[in-house]
Length: 396
Image 1: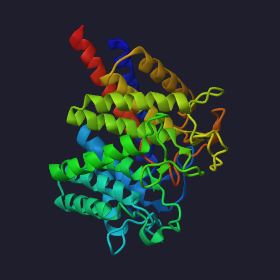
Image 2 (image 1 turned 135 degrees about the vertical axis):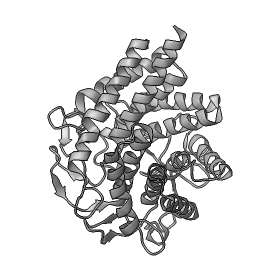
Image 3 (image 1 turned 30 degrees about the vertical axis):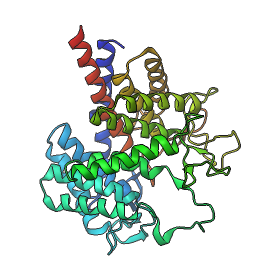
């Protein structure tokens, strides 16, 4: 990849972020009456449901705070972040400090805090907004929320757990998200606390859920790390694995661990090889490790976030370990994603394509898709390709 190519990609992602994706959410998502954000937006940005999903509220607070901190100190971005932060502070959690899954437009609780993913994104949001606003109250809230997450991590659903315990599988999502969350909270936590969680996350991701024989990451394993022959035990989620690998690369950069970066790169390539649809292109959503019919009816859909995580992982892998194979994979995923997901008429990206790559739903936001994966990936790819271009410039 030449200096010109890297510069082109950097400008491409910067333009998409600042002139397409961010303006879409600025224009359509802010709730001027009750605070926070509308996330259920149709293709054109019209609100079709006003319920508020706490993890999406928190993700958007994080996003606009991050833009303010890292891109430009625009008052509009700080105000956008502040609206969501205040809404979360007032309506997001129960009396025990656990964050709900969803609330009404005005903030009345709808769905109880049955897992801790809302809490994880709330902690990220508060930490980033505290940095942007200088408000120490939110810094304290970030620290307290993180402490509550650690307290619940061994039994994250608490009394909302539906499992009887006869098949005690543990899930990949929590160690994956903790590996990123703890780096997001670097300004809030002590170094010893960061190291403890980083070490736990790397061990779980790269030694427990990553299987040596297949080179794949399984979504669920038994407590001792063994596999289980069941729907849940055979489940592969390529997007989760790819996202986790760029988290591992970031940890490797922070700690100077070249071996971790190399292992994450190799795992990323294995997941791409395994998860790519050879007939229609794109990455599958869910797969069964033994080739059996997956339980999820949406298993063969092509989802926005899966391809975005692949693009971020590939860009970072090329930055640290440049090579033709990674470059070819990047161009392959880039071409598929940019040909199928963006909506040139109304902006932003479609979230859900059928297996053939046509929009299955034309919404831009809903219960699961909000202002997070698209702009985060645009920012990450922009900055990564900018660094790649600068390295080329210095060596030529």
